[in-house]
Length: 286
Image 1: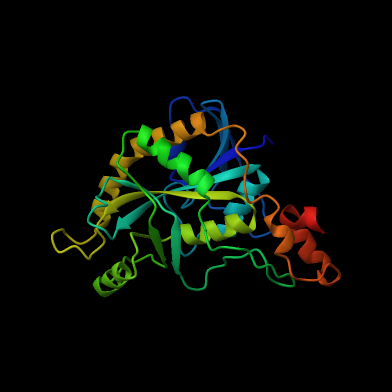
Image 2 (image 1 turned 45 degrees about the horizontal axis):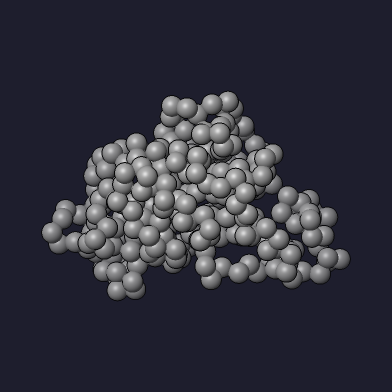
């Protein structure tokens, strides 16, 4: 696979765009079960791209039931070096209006019991995660979104909640008091696993509503989210197009090799089963 392949987590509508060529679907078997859907590979603006609908086509899988490990493992298997999560979010700041895009730089985890590591059952690794978003990728993502004609906020903290219900009003005010800027249900888990897989990661968050904290606006509703998200899909497609065209072909993934010093388990204590399960990730180091 070509070095520098771009992966996109989002809705199936993102890869239904003019100019997406050489399309192929890949149904992968992974050591962690089935991914959300088939991976769709092809070329866009001369760049090799891999798309995956994180909720499955038809939006069949809720945020708590997504097989995040299988999804990220599949991206790694298909040669992805740069992974972008395109996802809806609620705004926790007045300046971030529905319809705006946010390229975050921090995450807070409020999920519960998700399978958010590849390293378990006989093998332990501790990744560095102080800066969960890859700055070298986030900048070009923000540039691409601006070229698509959207209002883009550079930087911000994403609160990742469990879902699938939206926040209570008290929670929404609490998260604002913590300094959070947007709220969603998926990106923290994706970012953590991408880092373990040595994949550069950035988020393009599409603000669809004001959650339930803003007294001057109606509380979030599914109808409002869907309506605003549909309006944003065209801009998101254009952002992806610009990213594929403009991301430097010689951009280095800064996380390559980061697992080398993160695996704490003694090599002779790692079982054959664990080695086989994680060969894709740990093979170069054992």
